[in-house]
Image 1: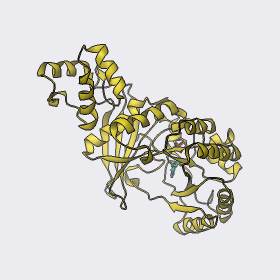
Image 2: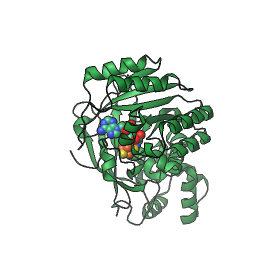
Image 3: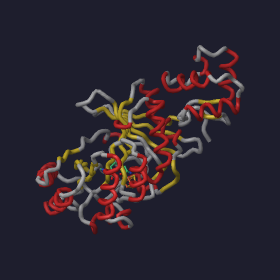
Image 4: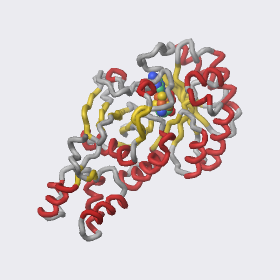
Length: 349
Ligand code: SAH
Ligand code: SF4
């Protein structure tokens, strides 16, 4: 059980309407108080009711008796010596754990946060540490939002970009991520175009997400353009094959007009041959929507996989680019604190 909450109502991570509901249920205060509370939580990111200077001392005591901030409790913060990436271990009100990562890219002065959408993950990609945890539960929207508010409060820095690339398959928790994205936009001040959702390819949910017409960036974990191999690397491919996936992405593009990113983790002697590159090139060449290929050097986990050599990745990239589509190689950050893609397993390093 959370040490912070102790039977109090958590106020952080909520939408303005939800804050309003709790305030009117618990306290018979004037409506303008909701706006003030919202501003202390989001604009000022305060977790200390005693500092809420536009409330009388009596009211501050009442607030502190009934409510608590934050919702997620920070258990640990690790900072990479290599690149100053920060990894946070959060405990949720029921004691479950999730991780989030704060990244600094050399070519940007803005901060990017990688956040979790589920405790564990049911998809079970064999090269991913989160997949090994199995699925525990979905996060609620407030738990997603509060990861960002807590990282901002603790680091003292403003986050500008978000990637749903932490633990979990975000589209298996679609309602909560859509709700969280709305709160990011309306309350936290992070625009939807600065938010990326990465999915293993849950076809019906891609269609549903498209119907919302939210202008986020969508990234698809492809990892192979060959159906048989993809089924081994991304087990949901057994349910929705490459053809279904590409059709869903066309529908998604028609709804949103957004370019799609394909993620491709480079696994030595598994999916990194010239033939694999050619298969990927052939697949993306004729797709009826704009796309970008992002090659991800494999980050080690407790698995039999190895990362492809640097030269192999370069060669792979140039074959893929013959399709006329752009390919990039993802920069690896936070590997010394197990904070890189696929390494989040709630373990201390
Ligand atoms: N659950 C989401 C987000 C995962 S993290 C999804 O699967 O799309 C972002 C990317 O990192 C995904 O493409 C994921 O497949 C990939 N990934 C997972 N484990 C990895 C590892 N050990 N090394 C490199 N990339 C990995
Ligand atoms: Fe789940 Fe994504 Fe890891 Fe696959 S890569 S097991 S979908 S978190």
